Image (cartoon, rainbow, N blue to C red; front, side, top):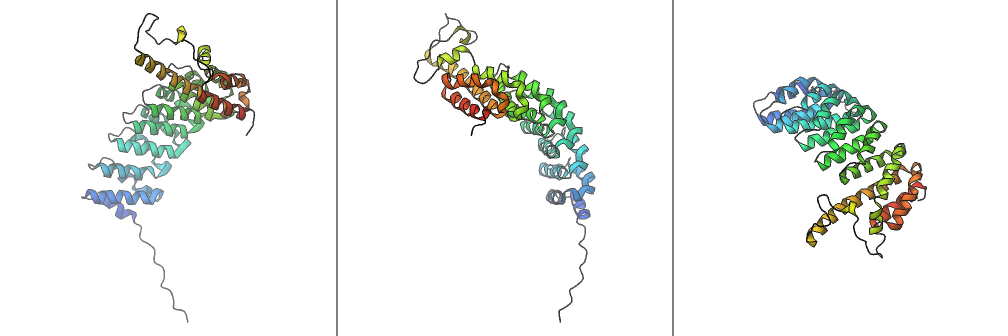
Length: 316
């Protein structure tokens, strides 16, 4: 005969012990307790008040672990996460933006605080805020002005992620991205073009503006028509600001200024061509400019334009 199995006994709830550990005298014990709460996730929601107190712990590792534990509790922690965006510890703020990003559109009540976080002195907090706003999709439409401002700052990564967030917001952000296609900085123009391309067919109103970037100045087409032809002289509108015909630069200086400017402009034109390809058939009106780029543009632009033409014409 088979032996009888011992009756199952209910497993003790670990949460009370973990909460007591959050108030322990040892930083090691508090850290382990915070990690234990995080492993329980939403099931440990009753520990949220205790975790809020631990966010002020004297040990930075304990503070960060507590912030992470708050972040895995989901929507119920939204008010706490919003308040964490102004915490003195940048690692707590980082945990907050990352947790809000995971909530997606459900984090919309935190939108004003996330817009303010775009200006955070910690670059990872600022970029995390941009990602969180983008994850809201169209529900993040009220963040368009703040994201547009972030694009114009000096943080290159933030510029890129803010542009991507605008593309995720979609149609409400399209006019702003089109306006940035005319920005003085070719990097900003390029990031705007890339973001517009991510939007796909709904970005059709941007097609003439992207085509204009691909087209560039007339002189840019005639200066580098193909590797077999010799570039002509710069026209007046290509002379760097502050220089005139009577100005003199040594050849190394002149080459540096010209190459830096031209490389940025060329990259911007390549990105605009790629964006037209991603828009697809609705970008049909840009085919003429793309064909001109294939014939007269530099190598990188020719390749991008050829690929865009195939995408627009639905050719593999």
